[in-house]
Length: 259
Image 1 (spheres, rainbow, N blue to C red):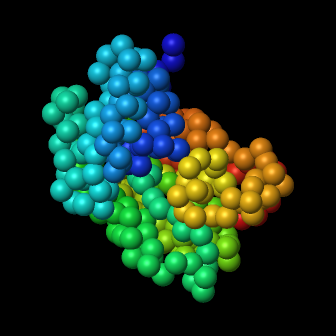
Image 2 (spheres, helix red, strand yellow):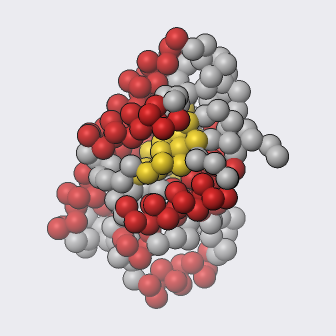
Image 3 (cartoon, rainbow, N blue to C red):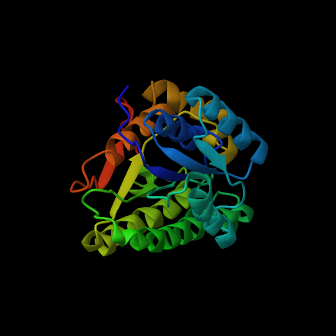
């Protein structure tokens, strides 16, 4: 069995469902150990047990909590060393919140929490993770890849009036990822931005999209992406030779014309 992420230790936020859970399962099969983070501790624990049972060895460890909490972020990094006797070298910045509606129509009461999770939380994780990866300088970077993978969105590149508040946070995340790539590239640290189109998951329900209207969109554009499609792309991206950085990937379902 091919294990292209053998000997890697990953941190994945937003790992209790959707893209995050799919990445955790795909990374495990690819040989990676990992720290999983999400708010829902019970759901996260079930995923951890499921992965460990499938792999037959301790592969995942949970650190539940708020991904925008600096204490939780540092706990994730420390847990990687404590449980797997190796510092994390692959960080997936995935946790995020959606919100239906534009700046004119969306629920203003949800703005601050979404901005805190999508921008502040992502920024803190990127900053702390970058410092952690820089500490691995003792190893030859050409032999040990170091990755930060940021999950953006196509609406962070092509804004939609139906989700412009959410899209604005993804514009910020997309910019942060590229700026960080330019800053860390000379140090041999890879930063990758993945911009998925519509992915079928619980994300749309939690974000408050109208089920009938969104269902029509899904029917017109379908079949849309599955979380596993994104996970497969991450495994490919992070298993490239250390000299190769896949900087920015837009991935959509074949029939998705917009955004």
